[in-house]
Picture 1 (cartoon, rainbow, N blue to C red):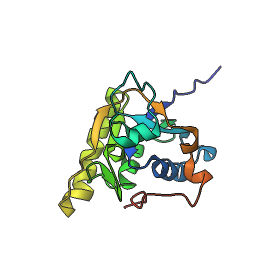
Picture 2: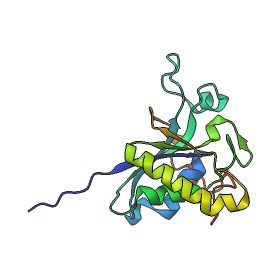
Picture 3: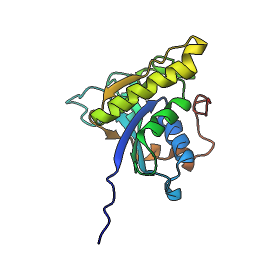
Length: 181
């Protein structure tokens, strides 16, 4: 008798500089610890396709002309960590009240966004966002500006960006990428 392994799912988040987003998620759920995150990649999503630039580069994204966000793609095991938990953690680890910026980083590539991959993820993202708004931001008179959009094409960032802060522990990290509650 064989037991079936539940299929993995994908979560996609943008919360400013993707180095820090990947770093803080992997510190919470290290892949080797088998806590639910199976694989991560930093890259670009949420922009428009350009026939002259079919695979956007970091430099193109930083100009703002592609409208892509720096994002983190997480493959996870939902039997060990739920999408709800990942969405809540996403909100805990950045400032979702600033439009197109995190700390000193500004531009559309640094926007706060949840890119849902299924209708169920959209429902969860909207519910958790409302719960977080009421519990953590309404009392301070702040509003979450995080976009919740259907995931579109994904482009892996260049290799040197992958797990950057693990390879370069003294590298730049946005000060908003910390636990806020």
